[in-house]
Length: 151
View 1 (cartoon, one colour):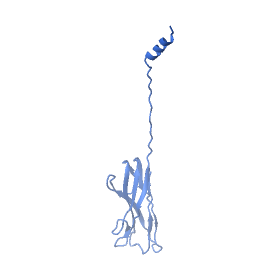
View 2 (spheres, helix red, strand yellow):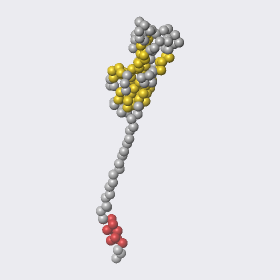
View 3 (spheres, helix red, strand yellow):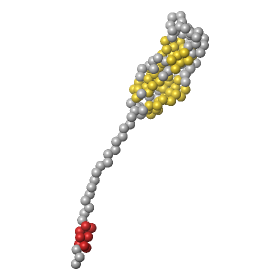
View 4 (cartoon, helix red, strand yellow):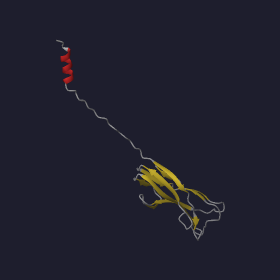
């Protein structure tokens, strides 16, 4: 009698040895933020000709949409770039501000704000120039640029 059938029967009838291990998954999500300028702003002068602002009657804020993972800071640079007409030679104090409503409700402010809520948020950006004493804004074209940051 051959031993081969007996050996085969032993291999076929023995229980299989089970094996197991683990597979680990990792992910790193870096804080990100993009800025989309939806519209530029318009400034208008008040009746005493000493306040030129996007907040005055006839003015409109600039509008930006930020899309973020959260964990970033949003800010406007405190020194806007403003080009007055050549006829305006007196000092002006320029102040950029921003605000938002909705899910990301922010009262008007000048300082950086931590954005912790992920998603898309729309912010209104304002620019205001103020003359002091008897100085007034002269006739001509005024151009202002406010740098917005999300970092």
